[in-house]
Length: 211
Image 1 (tube, rainbow, N blue to C red):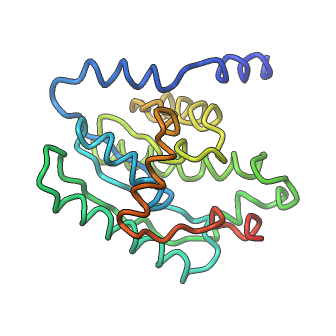
Image 2 (image 1 turned 135 degrees about the vertical axis):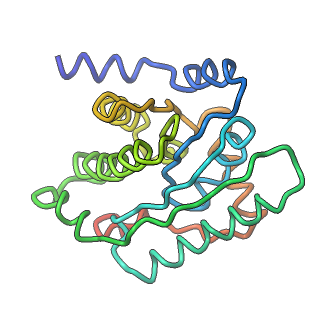
């Protein structure tokens, strides 16, 4: 049964599902968007700010060093400020800086330290961050919640959407399906990172992925 569910998730076209939602929008809904970093959010924000009133939640307790966390969060704020200064039709973007609490990550990673990158430890990390996003989205009366993580070719988009859908049922707030790497999204994020001279880290942030 579990294998069948995974096959079904892998067969879904999340970009098509997102396109269907976007086509039906008449008044901009409110979206709480979890962001892992400024480079990954660059394309996602450029894309979605034409449709949504976006509040970015920067919550990434997987980042092991506080100095690295601060560097990344400041880059996120700098990018959002630059977007908000643009004279275009995009809607203003707000940002919430989540608490820096690496103990939360080490708590969910306990017993999974030896898992390969991209495995069960990463899935637990996805859930940790998306659960915080869902909780806050409900508290703030947002219309949707989502994450920028699916823009990365190194992240499991099917698993992210599976977790997001489960949390949507639990918290009774709609999950915005995505596979932001589609439509050259990842390529565009690299171009925007160069354009805005964003700091691009070479590991996800946790101590286990740092090589």
